[in-house]
Image 1 (cartoon, helix red, strand yellow):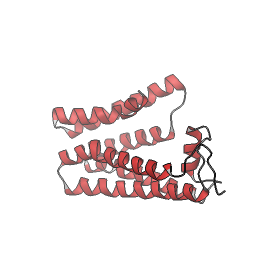
Image 2 (cartoon, helix red, strand yellow; image 1 turned 90 degrees about the horizontal axis):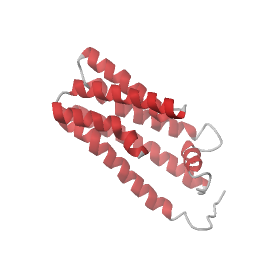
Image 3 (cartoon, one colour; image 1 turned 45 degrees about the vertical axis):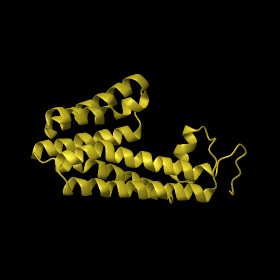
Image 4 (cartoon, one colour; image 1 turned 120 degrees about the horizontal axis):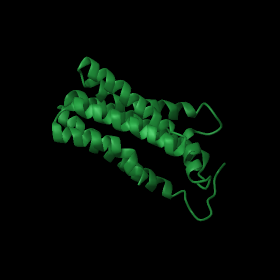
Length: 186
């Protein structure tokens, strides 16, 4: 259920664009929807994840600039900027803190139960940084090289498909390190 709620702003953006063929209206819808998502999340949980807050800020900022200048290219840059911020945080975390951020995030989700060798955590961290860099480049390539409708479809299905494909590959790669009695080379 949470995954559907997380994708609700993007789904609202896509549905609005498909129905109206009006990217400006679709931008307004996603700006309102993600703002409501942040507000409702805060009201219910008294906390908002950094990722949601960063995404919402960029949606409102880039959407507002695009609407003000009547040029959707600024909005099309939003996924790229967000992905590149993620890539920088991931790469930078290798040098800041005791462990790469991907390790901290994944172990907090699994209550510390996910144990991998240090080198695997480093490789995984850099793999995600590389993925986000590539996804950002791909987004901006599609935004500049293809028609608006193609970019909207790519934003909805292409970026999601790339992420799911990467997750499957990651899971297959990590599965060889997981067992009932995990041993690490730490």
